Image 1 (cartoon, rainbow, N blue to C red):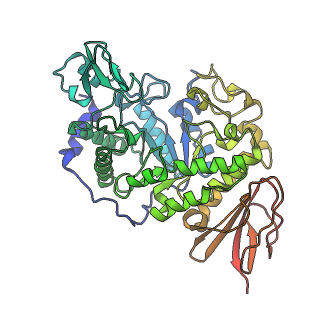
Image 2: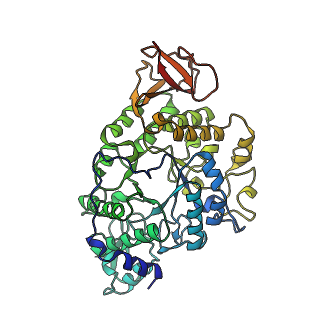
Image 3: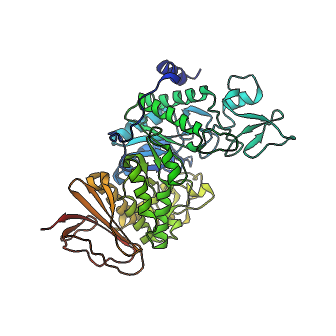
Length: 505
């Protein structure tokens, strides 16, 4: 038996019977909820040993950089053992991918991150395993095997398998795998599967010292007939799993991927995971900046704000599955500056994908969305060897070293905004109140926390504009040094403004 599994068994006992109280609808945010989280693909971040693959010791060496950005949280894409470059098909949930290092390397990374006051969330793939996982290989070959019931099987139909089912290489039968044949879905109708995933969570929390999990593809956990998303069984699994994690680690943070519309995402509250990514806000944000029209951005934010406390939903620009923000904005640097200024002044727990802070580009296929971090003008900034994937061509100009030298670079704007958010109560915790502008090219809102008020205005358009805010206020810029103003300036095209405002007599 794997030693970590034995440890988990000793700690968990009758894991399926343990339940913590559900998360109340209006619970106060836990002290450990992040302010801003930075998403990292370890394979592409920094290579410490010259094999061309980013690794955990390399990531540890770059913690000063991440901390310097102002992030107090990192989300690591999958780091468990896997035959694929991306790691979303796991072969051993208890072992770090050897390309990245060892379990001890991971523990050293977490200890160093905690010294930097950075929480560590790891990707946990509940929906499926790799087809190379020993559980599946055993189940494939032996219909009486203990893990046979951990997967879904069906007879072929005239020697063929229906959609989302795959032909067994061993006998005349099919197995279910929603994403592809190399990722057979786990069968959560078997209670032993959820019990095992609780053991996995406990090991990573107790023995590996993580602070929580990002949970992949959670809307697909339980299928009913042809319905593969958002079923009652899926909600029940997440309710049970979320309550279990909160029971053993009350300060942990769990956030799920439910890539759907707001009405569907909101069905995953109040008592399942702690938080979910706000995909509709991401889409509305990029669309507003791209088109120059505020559109549905603020109404979408308000829908989430009305429904749940801000620490329970996470806006972002783009993630590892989507065209990078700079590419989606057609290499418009002014647009990228607008997008991050809006993102980091919205309510919620914002997530930033590595490389966005220097304007990295990337489009499908997926490998080109996850290219090595551009530290310098060549691949030597990432590795002394041959990189696992060719860097983007714009590494010559879009890199950390170059932007460190430029006074008004995108990187320096990210740092300023992330630190500002961490230190300003209104931006961090305040409610959003839209400001009517009468102009779809003007996006404006207040963030209010007690007596503190911050006004954010973004001119998304291509012509100057003006805005008069009702009332008598003094305006102190939080983006640029300068005197306090009695009124707003002319709002320049494709430019954002942040003001601390105080009432004047």
